[in-house]
Amino acid sequence: MYNEYKDTTLNGTVEQMYNEMASRHRVRFSCIQIIKTATIPSKLCKCESTKQFRDAKIKFPLVFKKVRPPSRSSRLPSRHPDPISSCKTSRDCFFCMKFTVTRLCLSHIFVGFF
Image (cartoon, rainbow, N blue to C red):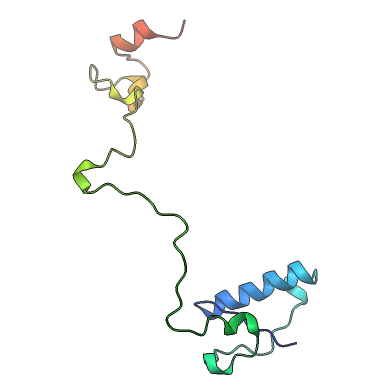
């Protein structure tokens, strides 16, 4: 059986072959024996599915355009500050992730879990 796959690496093409054989022919990875792998020039391609990518000036449409801010300074922060870690009253408050069990700051005692 002769198959052609187009990928950036040889390992990627072998992975494509394993996935295709598993999906089309219900063959497990351990049952497949690869005799030879080779990188061939585009003029020696036989399969029509790989011949369509031979053109060096091929272009693909941009399906999804990510809208980016015009400058780095106008970006929003990626994450909001955590309300638990925003306690500034005590340096070793249990709820402020300082894990000293014996002390709690006053703001967390009054808000406490009732």
